[in-house]
Image (cartoon, rainbow, N blue to C red; front, top):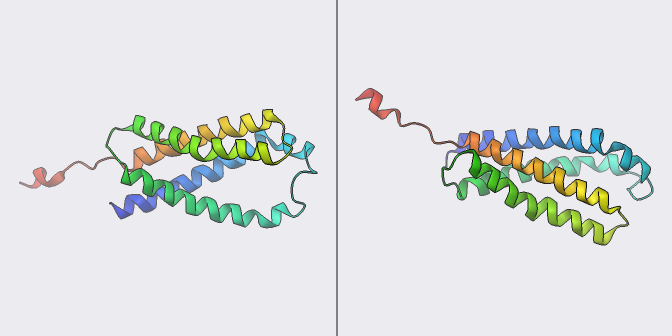
Length: 141
């Protein structure tokens, strides 16, 4: 495993998650969340550090799993990986939330599709960062 690309990949995926989570949850779904204020924890914002910490750890775990299954198939490998991880985490998690809390099904579907897109983008980033490096030894022969 190339540790430098692993670290860079983990950091890039974390930044992708931060940016897309802001876009999705603040910009696109902010009004929906505001209309459902009674469902959320009243002190939710004081606990957001837990979400950031979890996302940071998850970013490196995602990169690690990508590297361990790496087949060198380019961007489509990242797309496939993103779809699989997205369905396993975001997809299943969204529907579990629907079964647990009184959430509108339309919100759950948005969580699923936005989350899936987020993981596909993260998978593409992983595939771009963990590309094979050309063997430069021939240049010095």
